[in-house]
Length: 109
Image 1: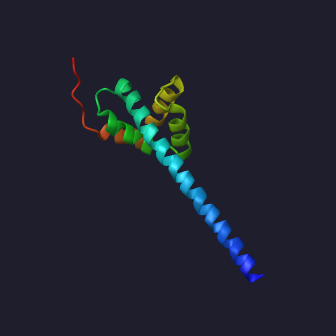
Image 2: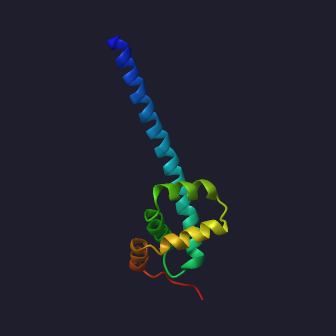
Image 3: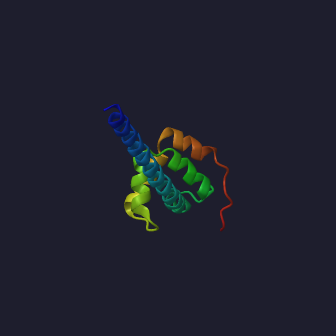
């Protein structure tokens, strides 16, 4: 009986760590996609600051579910919803402060 309980406990722990690994993989992939998409939005919205650094500020300010939603829906194609999300997140105080602290980029005339 004890062996059955230990086996069940091991199975439960293994299953949960597997879920964590899958979740981390989904989040990581979504974060990479989100960084790309946000960078593209920031290139148009804020050409005065480096897009990659601006994207890092914005994605850092997103909630985990927002990162997953953005990243899984983006997949190389921006929509108006993506642009709206970036604008909304960029207005959050910590994100706005991060963006304000970035060096100004050279803007071509």
